[in-house]
Image 1: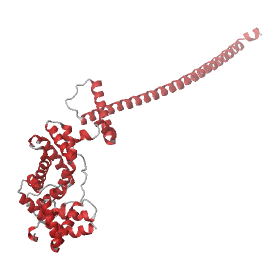
Image 2: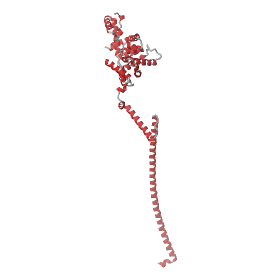
Image 3: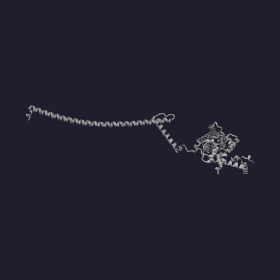
Image 4: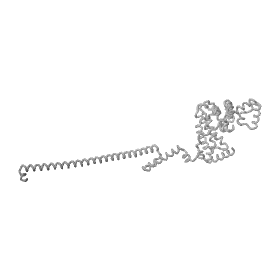
Length: 182
Length: 199
């Protein structure tokens, strides 16, 4: 992991000097994480793929604005967050983003496993903000402070979203998780 | 440490420093309700992390392909549809180049595929029509020649037969005239008495 971070810094430095090949390696390292984050956020594979494309294009165009190469992941997820919520607002302009109960109905079921289906369904029943907080915390492993930087919110807001989401998920997933992990 | 002072969610999510983690773990061992709540949170977390990452349906097409994917000629060579398309493109270019070079036309600014297709189709139709017309003309002329030859042969045969018949008729007429002439001479001699004297 240490070597990986060092290499990322080196690649970022080269990419900022216009080295396309170095940026290509960065893309290959981060595309799966970004794609899965966007997929679980927008609930549509094609849209997630298009958004991923846009994220890496914007990252390339704005790479010189990144002041600290060590914060590349937070910066990249910040771009992904902005792209995803632009799409979500465009798709549902008349609906308040938080607490939308229709997400569960339109999101695809991705895996034919009962536990996985239950998790997918439970995630889609969260609001977009809550779901994104869980995605960044549980699946991407960011600290609350990093999430606050990515989402442009106070840490207290981040904690509130994560904890509220956990309470909702707990009611659905704790019984399923108990069966699934035995 | 009391139940209200511990943060079980932060504990499960790994947000507590080691010192506080130890305090929470000690409290949970003694408090049944907090233990049950921690169990539910752990099960929830376990269920969440059971969701596996998916592979992206295709690579990010920005610049990554340049490094990690085969070179363009290898991709084309390994792809059946792409190879077919490339073949069709080469064929179309060859037809276009042929048309330009043979007709001495100036090359258009932009390749109009539909116009090229129409022109090629017209040229093919024109050549086909010319070949068909030539074949038809040759067949007709051959038939006419054969018919003339047969007619000439029949005519020559008929003329030969007619000539033969005419000569036969002339010979017969001449013979009859000779008989008549001799008969007239005999009758004339008999009537004049010269016949007796001659005998």
